[in-house]
Image (cartoon, rainbow, N blue to C red):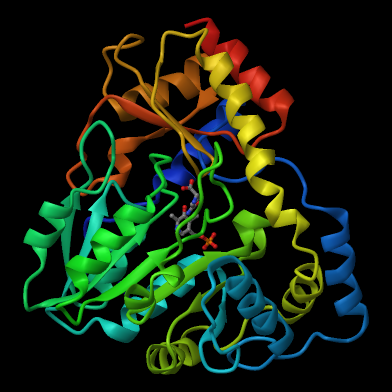
Length: 383
Ligand code: PMP
Ligand code: GLN
């Protein structure tokens, strides 16, 4: 018997570039500065508190919306940092990472034919998520060269069919950070509309040079329409644990939870208890900007001794470089060549665009041990 043919729901989608480059990096024994994940371990204390929860027998299904102590800890933290009170009971839901949070939001709110604005370049799951929900992705470019939001273009993209807009600050891949003025401008543009805001804030604690992260939670008229998404993977160096959360007003959270319960139902119990205990100490996330700023500076200093042109990096754990002084290759071919021949993996920025726009820029991840960064820099300096 033959396997029945399928009509793909995502005909243009292949394996994500992150997997492709990590596989190539492993095959070629290259230093992997491609896919975004730390190559160092998390705080041993975090492992202890999760282990403790397992030993205590906290190993069965937790409440559908998440362990109450973890939701409480998140509500307390958001109030302390952003002066916005979320109800831990009705407005915060624990998710299996930000990725699940985002797709669940989109499935919950996007109806067939609804338009969803995303600002390109953007994280690669947004557009396929919108398509799976039957929505229409509307791609608005960030300003070429600076990757700053162009509010005239955003305003012009709003139509009566616009259901939501997705923003991401600190930004993957460009490392830009939205200012308070940017958030106020967005608030002003959305004010006369019923457009929902999906604010991807997974890099919230990686903001450098004394700048602040301006969460949508800080702006009352944005918070009222916002799903805020974050991820413990980024903040606590545990990307493989896949635990995050979505904070949204009760009416939005109620719809979100309807989908969440049939999507994952619940999220890893002992990890939730462990995270709740670990969050009692704010030091790990308050010290994160300095931790990553030092790595950024080390990496940038080294890159200054190469022929790459450095782009600014205000936040996130990504550093972009212009390759035009180094090679005539397109971004993707360059990344393949760099991995295979020079032994350093990077991600082409074109992977974050729907039309493969090639601006001769590639992204490195600096969430790595100093020795990893130094090994990569040594290879890059040979170019
Ligand atoms: N959004 C952005 C912008 C990201 O960079 C990532 C990390 N891959 C995610 C969402 C997904 O986060 P998680 O690993 O918690 O699913
Ligand atoms: N967020 C990470 C990146 O942008 C990894 C994403 C993934 O592997 N899906 O590199």
